[in-house]
Image 1: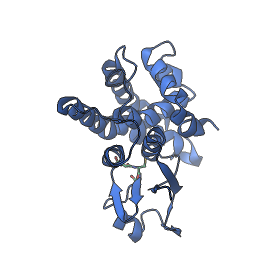
Image 2 (image 1 turned 180 degrees about the horizontal axis):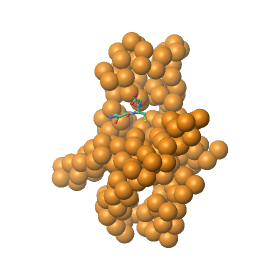
Image 3 (image 1 turned 45 degrees about the horizontal axis):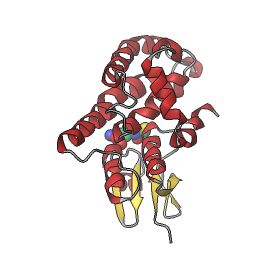
Length: 216
Ligand SMILES: N[C@@H](CCC(=O)N[C@@H](CS)C(=O)NCC(=O)O)C(=O)O
């Protein structure tokens, strides 16, 4: 029987998408959703907190093993399963991938997703409108985060060089969502290396399956 893992979380979540991309890139069979072992788990329920101490998603279930935190999950999948390596062997290069995974999943995620994209995805203004004052307030940090990512990318194909790594999988869903905003071209200039990078990621087989779900 093919070994299969379960990703606990909804497909629209950027972090769930990173884990999904990881499975796709490695060729790991997986299921996805808000149930575990056939039982629906309420978001922020006691059962959810038993899976993640802070009630976050995603959580990976691999048989009896339960693992949370996106970058840790991806590192586990990369080392535990066959398939193309998504981290370099050399300690220094590997540490740099870890470093970027942390920078992207903590600070860049906060600027791009928590403080900005979520304003559009779940508008909290009067009558369910987007709070444009909050958007304007958050936009400078978005531009700073994008400049940081563009600086690391420079003229390379991927963040760490010519090879795709876990760092790319962490940032891909975040950038894909930013680029898909109606004013995405004002944030990521269409003729920039960053725009070409977003396109490169979304054109991969994994990107076609996971990221393009945004645009449906
Ligand atoms: N540090 C966590 C963050 C996960 C996270 O913030 N996930 C979001 C969904 S993309 C979430 O659970 N949001 C619900 C909440 O914050 O209560 C990770 O890297 O996995």
